[in-house]
Amino acid sequence: MKLYFAPGTCALSPHIVLRELGLPFEVVKVDLATKQAADGSDFTTVNPRGYVPALLLDGGEVLTEGPAIVQYLADLAPDKQLAPANGTLQRYRLQEWLNFISTEIHKQFSPLFHPPVHEAVKEAQKVKLARRFSEIEPLLEKQDYLTGSRFSVADAYLFTVLGWGKYVGIDLNQWPAVTRFVERVAVRPAVAEALAVEAAAKKVA
Image (cartoon, rainbow, N blue to C red; front, top):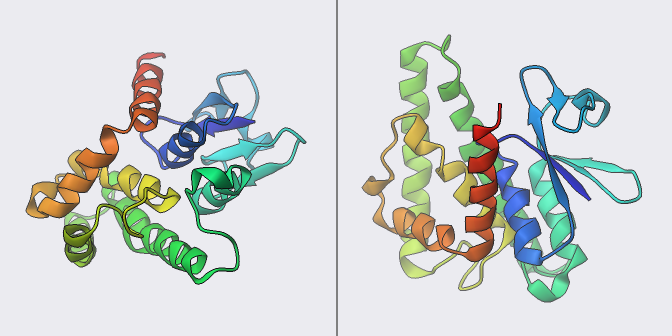
């Protein structure tokens, strides 16, 4: 499998999951401005939408959209228990979290990374994000991860989007349990490996 990624994006989530699962894969960096991949290919032939992540499967199929990708990967190695079994209420709870993160946190960050957006709009977005973090805080005061005591693909996604706070002036220390969650996830070996690969990729022109 090939994971097309760009440093600092939501592609970190499936990157973490791949390493947590120990699956064989390679990463291909994408220049999102030019849509050129590091292997010389035109990324729009992989994902016509032009954004990451995109997962090229061994059979030639391409899977896009982070929440779909991480569930697909988790089902390749069910013994790792990064996602509950399909058809169970627990699986729907996981999907509930993935959708919440995608729509209520991930997309709320998007305007903050676009300079033309008016400052008043950005401040409104930060208020929305603060409200969502405050909703998560009591849960993480009671348990280590979103679905309980076990790390899941939803935690990889939440960790990824929370990492953007420092780039847009959001201090997570306002939410101690959320901050502890980030610290807890960051020291996982697979997460540290993925972050190191991204850091190295940033240094390559």
